[in-house]
Length: 304
Image (cartoon, rainbow, N blue to C red; front, side):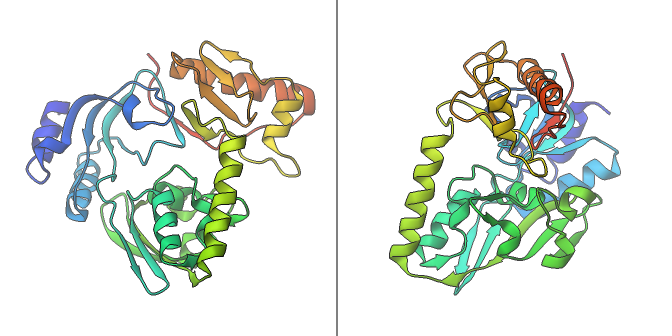
């Protein structure tokens, strides 16, 4: 089947206005890099989300879930098959000290709404740029907090399009890993357990974390966030800094002079530039310290 046929078939169950052919993925990624998707779909309901997943599975079509695009690099040749984002599934609901959020809700928005309800426990996420779905898949964390500290359960789709409710234990949340990522599940929604807090203390913590983030991270440029996982006993940023790599890069991709753990797009970088800069960092750190830096960002798609 052709991509045109895929789009026509999907339009039987999904608003045709939310199905796009040859859609550039640059506008959907935080790096502002990447080629085109054969078919790009934005479901508006859980039923539409299920329809996309099942259609791709039944017809053996490659499928990529794109969250907020904050932890992903799409190669310049783009993506074959179907790219789906649940960004329209962004409902957030607070009941008592429980917070319910759909996959496409931004984690920082959930954090801020929880804070506005005097709930504590989600402050660590006030500056994380990803979606709830992506945060669940990688057990997102910052400033001493992690998703696993507050999660109750997640509603997910299997690759076949079947719904599962996974408990905290079944999610198998570890350092930047989960059963969601291991088994290729797609998050529909998640429920979190927070606690009543003191509003002034919550506000002060968020203000402090926001200051730390804005003063230390290169938010003025597009980037994929923290590029590398923390190697045991070390900090990736420190290793890169001590390797003298800040300000170095390929093309318009550069190891940030503000935070060595970030690689930024100075304006006209290609995905190839960005990936070549990642590989340069890995090579130099390995030569200097004998340590293999593993990427936290996911690199997908085809080369040109």
